[in-house]
Every structure is written in structure tokens, then in C-alpha cells.
Length: 132
Length: 173
Image 1: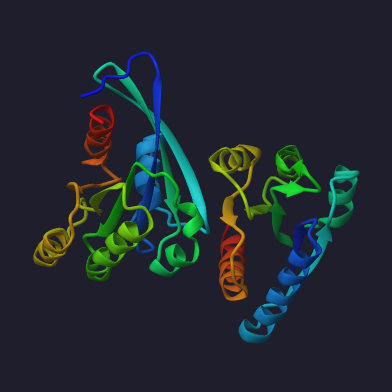
Image 2: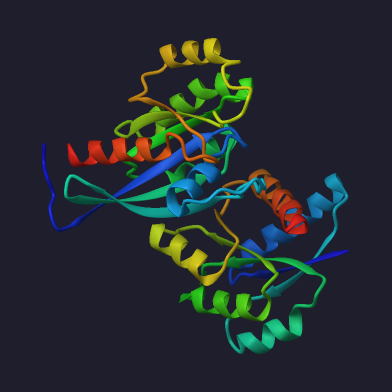
């Protein structure tokens, strides 16, 4: 089974990710076990205790509890150089997207406006992360 | 013509077109002067940034390399905002990508009418070049592109010429 980490403070968004991966399992037969990090408190400790070599990707929100994610993405990249990191945000400008790439993300995506769009993106993400 | 001296004029450019037409390759050739044979589809957006000096002025182009496919643009309209230009791309070796060009042109006009629209026909270094010249002529006549550039991100042909022309238009604004 594939494993992935979602770094997201919004409970509704976390539920949407879970629902999307459940549907992907049913329709595509691809099973992904999700772990969640919901704050940057003791972040180094959290990622070390959560992420194992089987993790193929991380989705990270660009803002968690009012804090920008960039330094934490850099930390994640430093600790896990081969992990595929997708940044997502519902309100990112050009500066945010540039900063995300400078921090070490592999790709950036505006949060999709529909579950179908989210699922389609996640299927692409799985394929992309597996082929990296 | 307005000449802006001593400051940098920043302009956003969006690339539109089918998947695999070479948007990321064009961005890499422009932004990093590099090329890779390896194909990796873009999930969302990648940004490429480069200054072009033109007539004593400096233009900073930020190229938004968006994922390909018309459906993506229709569902992700928030990527559009304040572009100076859209570059619609078609792959000379892929007739479907050429026949889809008017759809991307329409998408551009629908979302940000004030941007200029260029057409880039990519991969002209490949031997299939010339196969679809007739189709291309039909497409060009059905849209009002500012200009058409035939480009090869592999050899660099036409890439700098296209962005220099864009810089010329910026300076001439």
C-alpha cells in the first residue's frame, strides 16, 4: 500500500482529501494510506516520527494556522530529499508560488474547486510521484 | 513609444496548449537556457523568470507554465490575472494539438481579453516538420494572433526571437 502525508490545518479539507482517496481506491484500485500533520508545532519531531521510506508524496498547504509554510517545507526537503512535495493553496500569489518552489516543492496547484478535479489531480500526483 | 530607463518592467506571460506540446521545454529554454528529452507533465503551474534587455530598458518576464489541456484552464481560471501575453502552443508533429489551437485562443480571449496572444509552433527541429503546414495555415487564418513563431526548445530556434519581440512590445507600450 502506498503512503502519503497531508500537512493541512483545515478539517474540511482533510476530510475532502480522505474522501477523494477513498473514491480513487474504489474507482482506480489505488490504495493510499494517509497520515496528517495539522500544525507546525515540534515539526521536526512530527515528520521524523510520521514519515517512513514508503511515503511517496506529501501535500502541503501554504498556510497553516496563519503561518507561512515555506521554512517548514525547506526543513522537510532537507530531511527527505527524494520525497515528492506538492504545495496547494486556495489563495496564492506569484510571490507565494515562487517561494514554494524556492523552498523545495516539486509542483504547485491551486486548491481545486470540485471533488472531481481534486481526484483527477491526485491520480496524476500518484502517478507522477511513483515515476520520480 | 515610451522608454523606461533605470527600472525593471515586470510582465506576466501564460503558456496555453495541449499536454506534451512543449510548454515546460519552452519555459526551460527561455528561463534556464536548457533542454531535457525527459517528459514530466506539470501538475499545476511552474514559474520561470528572466530579464531581457531591450533598447536600454529591462523587462522581467515571469512565464507561467500551466498544465496542458483545455479542461484544466476551464476549471482553474484563478491562474489568469493581469497577463501581458498568452502564448498558445501547438506541436508541429501532433495534428490534434494544431487543430485544438483555436480552442485555446478562444479560452484566452474569454479570460483575459487585454492580453496579447502569440502562437508558438513547437518542435520544428523534428523531421515531421512540414507535414501539417496546411492545417497550420487554416488555424492561423481562424484566429487573430499577434504573431506566429516556429520554435525548437531543443535547438533554441525562434525562442529568443519570440521573447525579444514581446519585450519590444512591452517597451513600445
